[in-house]
Length: 68
Length: 286
Image (cartoon, rainbow over all chains, first blue to last red; front, side, top):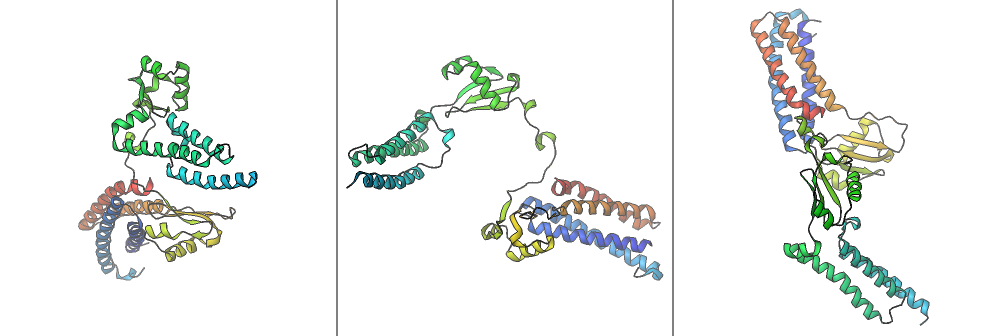
């Protein structure tokens, strides 16, 4: 597995977790819990953005693995 | 009129009158009554029984007595709501039996409780050892309540210094295969959401005996058919595990990459994720 595909996998897991987190943030009845979930959502968002930027650099560096 | 018809008539009418009067008296637990209230209940019951058997010649007299024994307790209730003075006279005050771990013998004498009886009452409250009791009080109802020494009280999350997520009461939304709409709506869900949830767990609605939604929105189902194994909601644990995996991934990337900027980005995110995990732990795992 190349580095690029590893990073891609991590991004996928992050996005999946973000979805579940968003679900819980919307269906929980407690305001405090909701805030914690929302904060976690914001954190994952920034991580995803940075990883995707890194992903682009990696794909630029190793074009032969693009799409893997 | 024949006697038996008379008795039938008065019994049936008294049955409903008494039902109404008892509803009027409120839903206080009969076990935790002050002795006087208990007596007033018995008097009401006896009067009603005598009336229903036509042992009281004039029914009007019976109703007068019944009215007094129902209305006076009611009036006393309202008065004691308004005034503490009346409340104390009617209900009496609680008596402290054990203070700072020492038995107050005079108060024990005043309540006419023997040492054995006190010990028995303490055992009812799971205080077998007198040395564990810091404070005990006899309520106006005659119940004895016990406050244990702080090192003998059951551990709580607060005592252990653990943060736990706030939980609200669960709502029952399915009973006997029927959807109960009111709690479902109060949760902010609709029947379509429930349909999707049931479909993902592969159960039909008429197979569900009880369905409850906890405060985080997870659905727990109990089925009529106990041979069907349902996966219990473990989504939150999975979510936490996923975050742990991502955190480990980021740390690996940070170690592997030769690009200095990327290394810093990875390790910074690994650190924030570590903090996030610590924050999420009470909400996802406990």
